[in-house]
Image 1 (cartoon, helix red, strand yellow):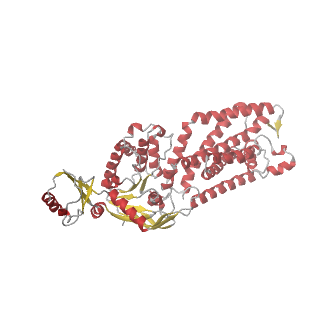
Image 2: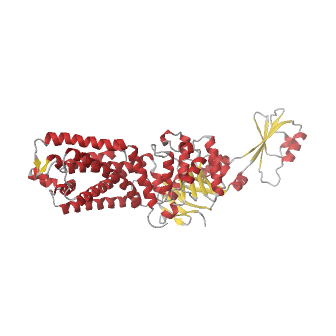
Image 3: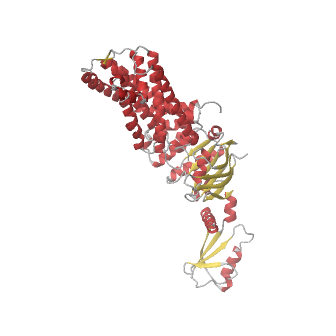
Length: 256
Length: 310
């Protein structure tokens, strides 16, 4: 046998996607409802007081942040659950005894998780377009940012799933680290609206670069230079890949 | 060349526990080897090192001539594994779960083969049933179907019939015989000795991480097998009669039964002689019965010997 085990990758991908389709209604309805709620609460209640942010209506301004918030959360939770569940119920034995290398396993699981996150991102974008008028100045950059975000956070989720020893740990990082970072990352406001000391602090939050870049793709306005945003997310993706490679090479938490 | 070969395989877990202490084992293509051993003897660790679930601490392992660590792709694509624990995705349908296994091993879709396997294991009617709705025995059948789905040349069965009903056990023995006829090499672990006795060509005994012996089943039974003749007397006696003292007899069941141990492979068993002298001594016999020592007795003796030596 030479080259990649593409059939193996496809088998994992398809199996994971079937899990998603089994709960399609839930996968589809919950982001639609929560997005609508955000628009009602933030768009209407707060938007009534904040007219515009840097020349963009507040309702439209929060759309990129809202998409990022869901995409990041979904990518992490899908990927972490996807690999944690086989560990938990023991079916991981089959994956480890199959002729698959780490890259193939990662492509299968992370690819599926990223696809699901992408799907939800698109659903939110469509839902939002019912509430506000959305312009996309740089559609290619928008797609690139969206794809890279799905991918990199699915990778992070995959690492969390490998690391987690129980369901509590599985929830720990998303709850204690990721959600605050995303909320504080300028999902619903511009960094420039913060006091200057906090603006400096915010620059240490990696999610700021993501949302800023993504928002630039929509409206051409950004908190940080867009090149820096792209660099940050590329570096983050590579870091995650490196960690996963190390995990499979050493068998950490996988093989005794 | 042996199909599966282990040379000086050691495994020391992080806890410091040495599960395998330099195991040497060669299994030829198309043979059925039964590994017997008490719980914790190292059976599962041994299988897991070959299948890629446990990394050996030292030594070399090959399957079909491919090293399981450096050439893992080639080695693992030959192996099917039926694990001891029932580990299955509960929400997935039976058919999908089995097809997934075939895909993971890089084999092209083959619905006819999957159908054949599912029918063989009486799972065809359940192909669209979620696994969680199956009984324990049915789940074990799914595990077997998954292992067979990618047409392995070496099949590992780790305690395959622990806690299964008679029907499945019989089905499985038939499947094992079929696979053997097709040239599949089978390694099964068990602590049911009757299972090894029923289907294995060779028997290996493992305890405390060491292989105590590997031998042809027939030879082993013959070499270590003893027979016992039980003579039930019409009238009980208080002691073995003087006239019969030339034979090593013992008295059981309050003098009603005379027991004679003999070696079936011995040139002269002395049976005819004994029977003649019995009637000469005036003892009338109500019934005779023979009992052959089973693999179980042999196994228990071996493990006891090792423990005694330690």
